[in-house]
Length: 144
Image (cartoon, rainbow, N blue to C red):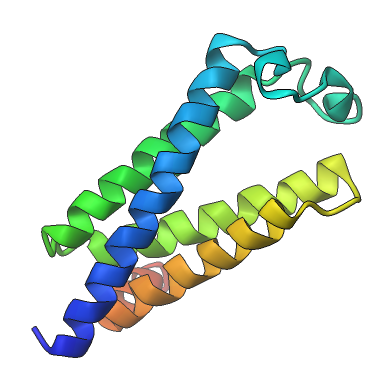
């Protein structure tokens, strides 16, 4: 492994840990208290959405952005062959998560939404840079 790829792997793993450590407790709190009151999230924020409370968003936040990111970090640090693909998928999911938030909740845009969209893009790009062939092979596999 080249030193550049090793550096990318270290940066990616640290980023995934950061995302996961932020998502696990918040997602868990939304699962335990779906009203969002414990986090100061009013139910009015969900008035124009499909959700009556924060349970489903909490489950996704906890499982995909939280546990998924921590699992991605484990794969990255173990140099697993699926690490780059996991990073691309997790980064894309995080960006989509933020886009859906912005569309459904509307303005004003919160600085954390911008930050996590950028972190998702960085995760996706680092995953691709770590092993572009894995991503190409998966994308190309759908064309057969």
